[in-house]
Length: 409
Image (cartoon, rainbow, N blue to C red; front, side, top):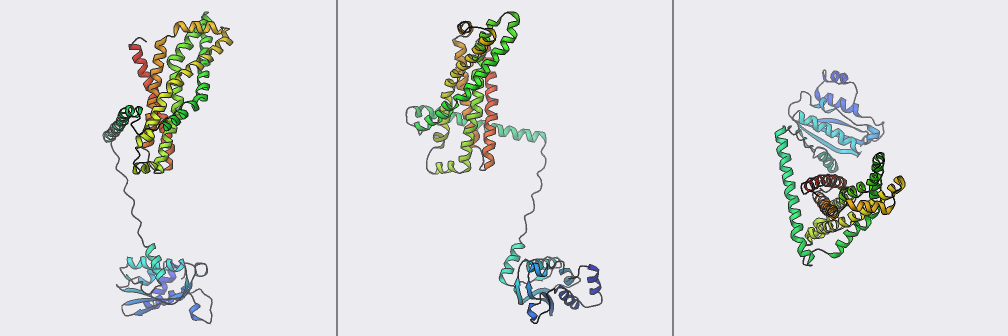
């Protein structure tokens, strides 16, 4: 087919439409001359009354013939409504070159309201053309922008629904905990032991490092300030009260939120994505007793133990710094600390640690259960669980501080 459109316009004006079609078909022939007329690649047009018949000849291979495009408009320009048929008796080998040619003809035939008859084509060509003719669904129009009032209402409904689900999770835990303790629930002892080991013994190294450093930092800052007034002995009071009352429970909870809370969310989200939770439900295994209750029970029970351990190592870190910077003997340090730290301080720290452990476990399990089924949701669930756990720990600690102040503790 000639590349210059003006040349087609010159061909169309002095000749009949059939002659123009024959000239275009002859221009499409690019195969070398040969003794066998069937080896010549191209197409010609034959008139059959009110029908146009396109005769396909030769091998239609892309690398040999190229792709014939934009030829249909020269056939259908100013044509009345007719039927386009095909004669493929002389067609040889073919590939996508033929499909592109037919697609161009079909598109223009629909544009000029000309019937397109594929009965004369090979069956594979008809199937490929039908597959290429599948219309892509139009994109959905962009959603209308919502105003502030609508956005606020939707967020309020979402937060309320989430609060209801969390309350349901807490209620199920309280209702199932007592039967589980008496051995009448679906809770397995081995699950609790495994979760306790993961949340307790396995977390001892990181709890040790963090609390020792926090105790040492408190002692170093206190010594640098109190030494100016000759009150270095009160470093023991500062370290004792700060570690027992605030730093040990809060720092241990933050550690467990990043380590264990994120792990809970990632584990349950992975099971959600692998459809393991659906398999448990189909098998009749209670998901709550198998996944949530062991983790909540293990972390809630292990947090007070980790808190007490954090208090010990935090005080040791403060004692070491006081001994090195202020030359306070261990006995002097401990005796001074005993006068300022009483049983109520330890009791407040224990209550905090239990509440922190329960909140972290609930947050990790809830976020893991609500995750969707994709690999990206696993990482998103772990990140969300860590953030939510830390925020809840700090907010709950502020609430404890207000309550302790009102109770004069």
